[in-house]
Image (cartoon, rainbow, N blue to C red):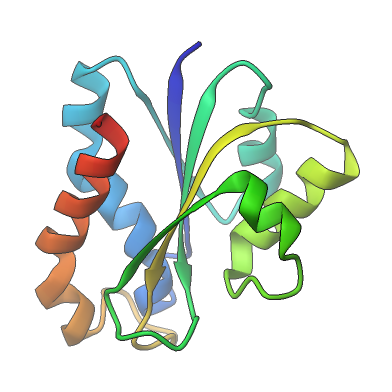
Length: 145
């Protein structure tokens, strides 16, 4: 059983790219520990093809729960499946819907990063840009612990 980290997000939509940028920042460290890093971006089918019932997955995506921008939320994938309809993650919801549709019993965690702004623009909002190091550190610590 291994660990895999999947980052979902759109680089052209400001803070929607935060998960991808975080994984790119911590990629070398986690790969040195034998953890596979998967930059899924918005390709839900590609991400789904990487899932299996043997490994532990960390699915990282931007969220809009109404928290302070940059807040990192950790939830088990079991809990996410139980609260369908309340999930405010654009991309992982589609991925988890596929998981449910195919009755795939995957193990792991959803890691949500609260956004400040979604607009057509390359790069993060100033708020998240200033918190990127802290966000990356929290997520890295959670994954390697």
